[in-house]
Image (tube, rainbow, N blue to C red; front, side, top):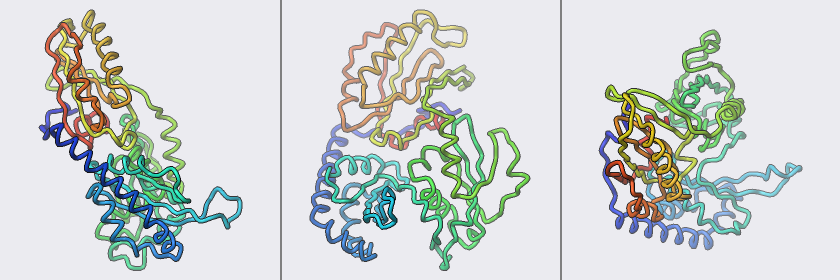
Length: 375
């Protein structure tokens, strides 16, 4: 396990962050003003099967919010209707497309959506589209399209993280230059982008069929099994049910020193898309055991400090990891940079009596400082 924070990152000054936030807010307001004027024409084109006429203008409006954002337009029948002739539902998805820097921009765009959507649905991540799995995926040189219904998925359960590691199999992947990209598209359609980020770990794409004997074996990370891709959502739902949100206690060795960490798991940036800033609060302690972990009065004081810090942060952040090692405890919070939470922590008169408390803030939308613990 690598010690979090060992990798140096660039800090973003508060003034620059504030200016960026204001510019992004203006771009979001401009988008929804433009959308109100343009939506009828987009809807008419989409009803005629044309999703590309306004593509250039839509791309420009979205990328003014953040250059990493991607968009998708879709039209489908309302599945809530008992009749197959339900009304059309039009959807606009603005997604970060796997780019951590753009995740909060997509979330803020969605939060600013008008309450009266005129029959439209808006999303900040790709939604599941099981019907797409019955179609052909035209991707790269495979001009005839990949028959997605032939796709199978070998699942390896990793109970410790927890994540599902997948091998996505389709014999037509052999014709592709980038089969992994096609596999991720299929997974997004099967599960939705959020569940892919929340529950899926390593993804391998292959044209090789499953070895039925080997894929039913058990390895050190859990059970393997191979299912049609249409059955993957049920497998993920069953795995998720076994892993409710909780804090876990983990022990390890770092540079020869014992370490204990309390980790919120399972958790992913997709669950808290506005939390782009990492605030590490380092607290020394003086009462400790032979392993240099806090005990006695220091442990009692640390519990009080922990609760007071949580109350101070409130809804503007989440404690993801708290690490004790070698005479100090580090609280790893992720916070919303559009709030004053960093200033509140910086001005906090905590009165800690056992040494100097240090506070380090950095912009870290990928949550890289805590990845060794969470992923």
